[in-house]
Length: 255
View (cartoon, helix red, strand yellow):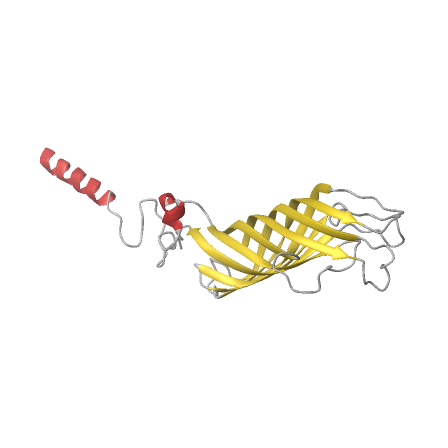
């Protein structure tokens, strides 16, 4: 009798320690295509050690493209295309959850210039500027279609919006004398980035277009705030960028 009980206990222990192909020891049914081990770059960045337990998908993104500073001084001083001026680059890390929501932490940097010289209305001022601008931002993402948990993952479209801190360092000057002019060499203030992004690709790598605006809570991104009629709005940036997004990690999915 004792031997029979011992054998039954031993068999029960052995069976309880085995995982069938369709069910793990916690009682969840595994998806037919778990994503946690399918990551190309996860082991390089150490995410492979998480073994798919961290909820969500994590991406590394790089954006670059033309950018425009909309302030008190007229358009770019250089009419020729330049890779050094009036362009931006951005590096970000984003995390996307089930349900079509996510967020991204990113850093943006750009160099800008502008001039009143040659303008039909403001040539008399002769204001010119050269500005370097950086922004650290945290934006939420709302996926209208696509994303890492969608069956239609070839195309992805989402809206974004959030908060940031923007910094500018500017050289600005004008014709002498320069009346009604307030000048700041540098400015630091909160900002509100918002926009939209469209991507194509697979769950591991995507490319697309991102359009964003960044409203600054100051009027000195171009270095000047002249007290003239019509000068009522703060400065802001507009970006049109190509975006590359690479998946670093995605959790194990369960049905």
